[in-house]
Image: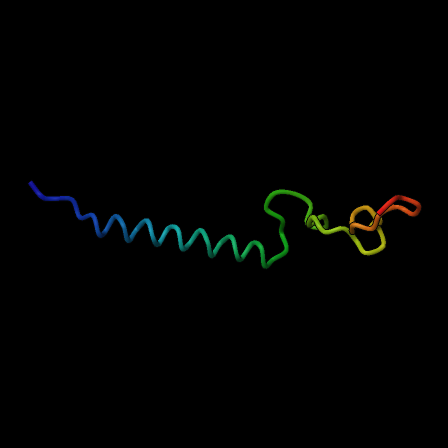
Amino acid sequence: MATPNYSYEKRQKELAKKRKKEDKLKRKGEGKPDDGDASNDGVPDQDNISEAQIGIPPAGSPP
């Protein structure tokens, strides 16, 4: 009985992982979002930042 070729299986897994990573980078480069709206990247627009978001206490509050 022949023994399993584990190095071949490992190489195939590595190639599949590499191919999947390249596909993901390609999709990301095309501007297609993977899981939602691309315009909302978690960073607020400069015009819409409130003082509370950047850590400035409201006027008249004790330090």
